[in-house]
Length: 100
Image 1 (spheres, rainbow, N blue to C red):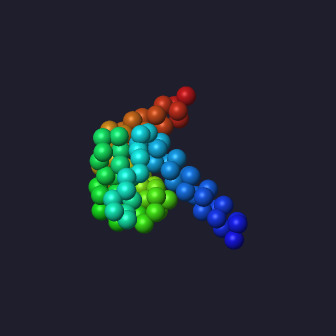
Image 2: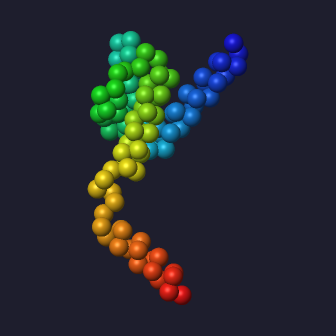
């Protein structure tokens, strides 16, 4: 039982660290019996991604961490990210290396 609690605490801390790396002044806000994460301007991070509010602060940090993972995935795999210019630069670098 103690190992499970320790593991949950560790994952909660890592979720919080991930969120704070992108939103340095993020904080937990309590609304009735629900918790949400807000950035320094007071914008609700969970509401932007249409995620439910957490029943505990740890669950709210977990949901906010999920939003960051989702954003990173979209930014990495978005089709417009790979433009023709980048492909041309890449092929010219390869050609220069081969010609040396």
